[in-house]
Length: 82
Image 1: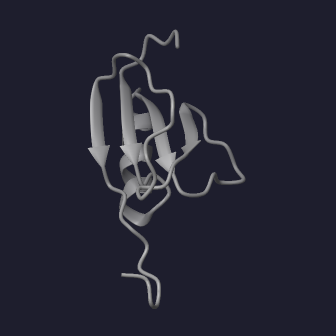
Image 2 (image 1 turned 90 degrees about the vertical axis):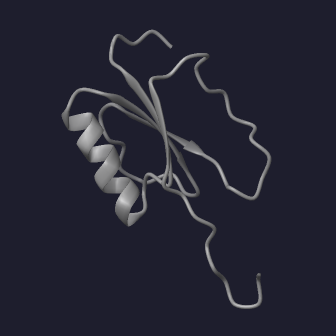
C-alpha cells in the first residue's frame, strides 16, 4: 500500500463509537483500514473496509507498518449465544 498519510487500523468502524473515530481520523488527514462485520454499501473516501469477525481467526492482509490501532469492535450479543 503506497500511502503518504498516517494509517489507522480500526475494529468496529461502522459501530456508533467506531464511526465517530474513523470520521475524526479521516478529517485530520489519516487513512483508515476498517475491520468490520458488514461492509457498508456506501464507500467513504480514505477508508478501506475489510470484512472481519472478532470470533474468527485473522485472515486479512494488513500493511507491514501502520501508525495506530484502535479496538472499538465488540462481539454482537445474540439470544442463546454466550
